[in-house]
Length: 527
Image (tube, rainbow, N blue to C red; front, top):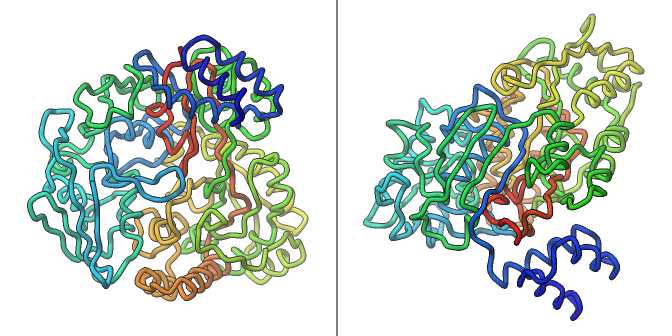
């Protein structure tokens, strides 16, 4: 930051210059709005975040069927709300590494099969109970149990034993896994008193806020937990989360000043939103991906030729251009992209109507194919479905599109109906992504992908400490998913959020939307 920007930032921090004036003068110096906002947030944070006030958030994905049980979180709203009241052992930092939350340190045995986590002293749950290592163990037990329906179940299947030793929590694995701490950043694994076994939806945790009002699919209100252990997180006195699944209405709420920040700005209007007075758009490359998922064990998608026909019938370049509008990149029918450190290129699958027609005829399928979609599945999903319908028609494939209600989409369509649109936010590591959604035993195996060779490679890769060999194993897994699986992944999306000049403190992050869903807690009401 040059001297003039430093001076201007300090004036904002001292309330001698308003944010709008700073942004205007920064623009005159050649900075983009996003860069200027990030610089300003860092400078103001150095001066001290402002405490108090209310931050209002408009978010998508919520439904009346949502639960406060973190094990069942399946959309953006549930994840955001869980972040308010709960915390995991460790979390991703802004660079994609690890920062300590309820663990203060961890170490592994030489063979990476035994992991010891030291649990933070002096932390209390919102019900007044002191956090112990036993609470941590009980939480992991609940998510890893045989009867568990947790979205983290696939990540925890290699645990063979757990125990506590004073303030230490110890995990023993049935095989080595160098990525275990990253797996424990999963947003389902909020530590609860007694593991949440008695009342998993009580929303009692160690987070910076407590939930005082919960209307699933409508609105949540959280108030600052006065006993929260970390003074650097949770600046506003109150956070209000309003569920607005309609893209236009969500953006309008931001523009009118009803909310201070907004998730998932539709790519097609991101440039228009960026020109709104007092609004900054943050478009961040990510591991998130918009997808079309087929159940590979359910007719007619249990036929490999039909799956390949639909994959070749997808015009990925058109999808990226007309749905993402420059806010993302092309996909290749795997869930892995350059966001992952062990990513390796594979031959790009391209739109090929002739190949699509060949495989469709080889499949022996007659008649149309039904695709279910909803605005709630990803921004522009119905438009993407229509583009797919048109590109498939050129191959002689008829797609029937059923536009489903947004409310209940994640409980009644996703992971239940055999062909639908969906999205994934990505995960911290390749092992985490594959273990969550592609391992045969994963509860969220939403393509019903059961492949013994893939499972063996995934488990073997966890214990392979040679980076080159491990990279090659992940490359082989990507090829298997692309060729054999039920995933059609045409594009990786940027996370596009927007904040008003009523709040400050936006900064870099890894993970999900809204600064990995920490924006309401890391930002503050601007003076």
